[in-house]
Length: 412
Image (spheres, rainbow, N blue to C red):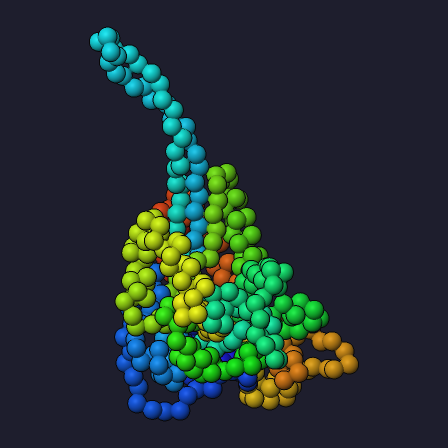
């Protein structure tokens, strides 16, 4: 007897994030104890960044920690941006009267940029897991309370060398392109056969998130700043970008092509409750200070060199998965019970949705980038051919809309 197909609610249930059931893998940050919630003051910038100058958050590490957890429950905005442009040279005739009263004409040539298409696709709606709270490893250069990046050693905290910073920056860019989670460090490249999407040690720092919050609150610095980063991972965006470019080029487009994955509403800033700090949080005022040469060098030098000037903490964040592998006891019992036979002596061919690890079997959660591209490839080509220009992101593949006249054709 054939089982009935799943209901609509069951088929879309995996794309919804249930905040009450946030997945916290082993080694992840544990939720804080219950206490009366504090409603902190904060504002949201035009790009969706959360900024708070609440005095209590700068004094109480527990309140700061809970505020970060609360704001982290909202995933960032993650869009694909495709844009095509080309240059055009245009000549025009300008007529004028010279000093002697005679009419003269001359040609002027202008080069302008013409936009052929410019559209967005909402990728963030496919986030299936998060946030997983992570922290930067002790040996990874990061801002830990000063205006320069540092590393934590067993007995000291020192300034990171230029080579260390360069190596880490290159790895972070490579990690993002490959879709690896943010807790994966450079040493992962040397571990053969490891499954990055199945890693469980997400808190690489010797300090917990709460301890970092306490350290920030204990600092007397006048222009200090705590930053919490929201990172989307899971898809190999480099490979997906190449596939999208190939699809666009297949339409015989030969202009200048831009394909980017853009993240907004991806940061939470905590800053002191003083007038100067609040002023610098207003971008237009900060811009005026820069062009009037008041920010450089005066404020910058104060932040960089004064003992009570500035300090940054960029040591933690939340990770949101487009796809990931999760282990459940139910899956291990079911899959180990005969559905899939795994042998330690002979490498089996396992389905794409299952991985074997030291902790057992891991089940794939979320949509793979290849599946997404298969659904959207036709829509992307159609958008390029129709010269679509829109600031509103597409959420459903348009090429799946039924063509009713075509349905009447024999053999369609």
